[in-house]
Image (cartoon, rainbow, N blue to C red; front, side):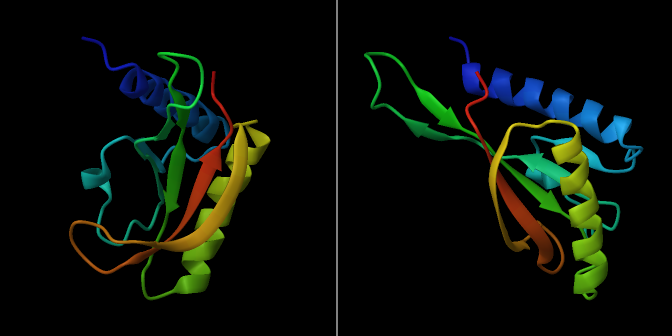
Length: 126
């Protein structure tokens, strides 16, 4: 049995890594694994989340809408975190990542305080 949405998410991580590297943001982590979000996340991290699914198309067609969380710290300096997040988002925009919308919020890592974040929704990837 295949896991096509995980395979697509892995390709998305690779695409994001290429965009971040091209923007000289090699210290930003791109991953599927939310457990990799470090406490503080000062350099920034982009986490590809499991997609929202819809089954309202033709038989056996599954629609998938992916989100990425752009996270950066420090948790105690909102403006510094926002600046880092905005730098990462701008790299994604300039790298022509197929973004649809973004919403500010917070991300609660496995350890540590809630860190500033944006959740970006992508347009259909396929």
